[in-house]
Image 1: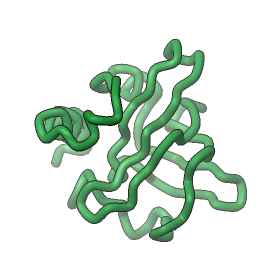
Image 2: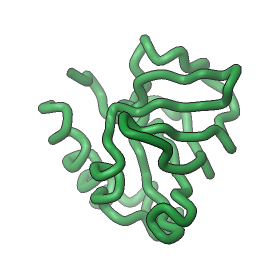
Image 3: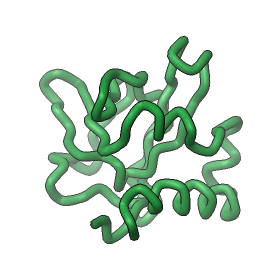
Image 4: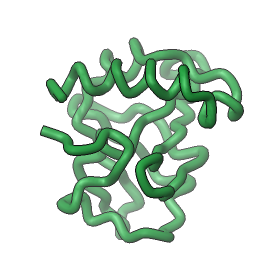
Length: 117
C-alpha cells in the first residue's frame, strides 16, 4: 500500500535531485515511453512520460508513488502499473494541468484505485 501517491517510496532507489529526463519507463508488461519531465517536490513528485507512437504521442502524468524501482545504470524506471492502466489514465494535455488542483485530484484518485489507498 502507498502512503502518498505523490511521493517516491523508500525502496525505489530514487535519489532526490537526480535528473530522470530521458529515462525509459517500463510497465509490468513492457515498455511505455520515456520521461519528458519530472519533479521531486515534496508531496507532489511526478513523471511526465512521452508514450511516443505507443499511444499516438500521448503524454501521461505518473505520480511518483507508482514507481517501483529506478535503475540509474540502465536509465530505466519501473512502475507498478500495466500498459493498459497507463493507457487508460486521465489525459495529460498541457503543463498547466500539473498545478491544477482538480486535475491532480482526478489523477490521484485514478492511480490510488490501483493501490487500494
